[in-house]
Length: 307
Image 1 (tube, rainbow, N blue to C red):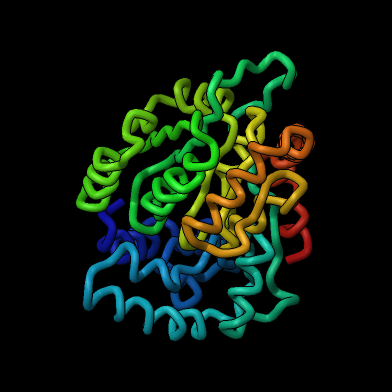
Image 2: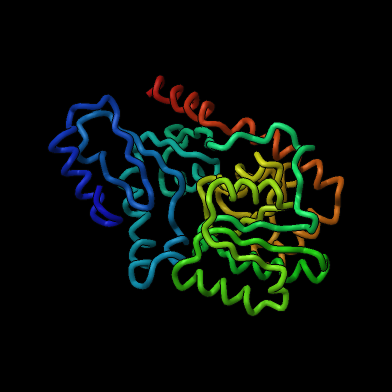
């Protein structure tokens, strides 16, 4: 309903005309900007927040809208701070509390993944050469350029290392990453596949040795959990959402410094210690079995019963 900007006004009008008083509960899903259901919904209403935007404004939006958004976000969060709120990670909960939300009114539910975990790790055939995977839309907030640079640094220590970048690469930033890969002294070891079908995505997850994630911020690193389910641990930056979806030194590795140099060190640590890699891989796969929509539904149902 509507586009990126008009959806808020059109949703308000549609609700007032067709839905007012109809539902038992209105869920105001906050994806960057809330719908402000608090101010017009007759029914009980709650917030559902995956993540706050904060520094993402400066990676995904142009000036002056990035500055306006960054300054406006604390204000509209303050307006909604009394709402019962559902989120998906401890990091997002702490973020909300920094803006005045009450801890006792914030509840966390599990995320879920649609893909089934592989049934047997021993049956997975990995690429013959150690391969790191960058998966997902190539956007500024994902910092794919950091992964390319981390790969280049790690390859100096692991000569057979390969990098696969899979995800839509449109826009100025996508072209920047393509040019970076083409100009790399290791360009013959980098494959840029663009957007891939789901079947190919899961195949890459299974066959790669590591997933690398360098996003500025997430609600939860779903791509991490999906890769875990296919028998692949992750190396990730220490940021909201990623630190929640990776148990450091258990299901993967969290970078001590959010830099290509920091990521390169963790890539080497994961791939050069076979025993540790095997243990993390198994633990990541086992943990992925617990992150299901059935659990998410159960968590959410319990919350509804106490509201």
